[in-house]
Length: 80
Image 1 (tube, rainbow, N blue to C red):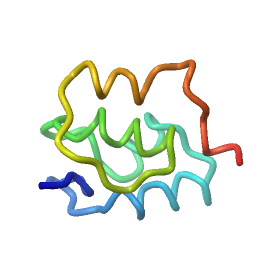
Image 2 (image 1 turned 120 degrees about the vertical axis):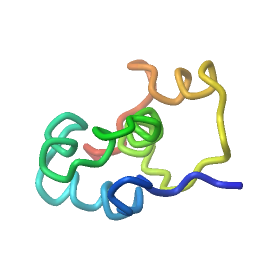
Image 3 (image 1 turned 180 degrees about the vertical axis):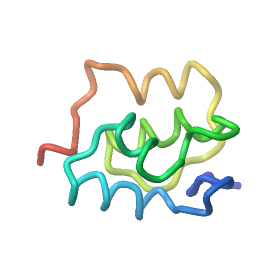
Image 4 (image 1 turned 180 degrees about the horizontal axis):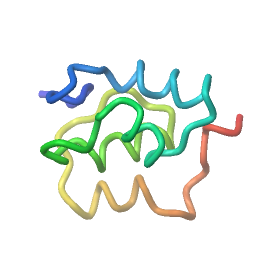
């Protein structure tokens, strides 16, 4: 099983990454604009990881694995 979208809004992580880059939105601004990551919030750590890494699909991850992907020391692909 892979995680590749916000179930509440049905927006894929690729759509969210592209919009974030196109409109220079961080996670909070993207959440406000699209609602993704703001309803049930289960996908929020995955969206943060997608924005940080540029990946648009993840296996189901535990909390420590998600923390590693969203660690502020990890490279931020939005600026590339």
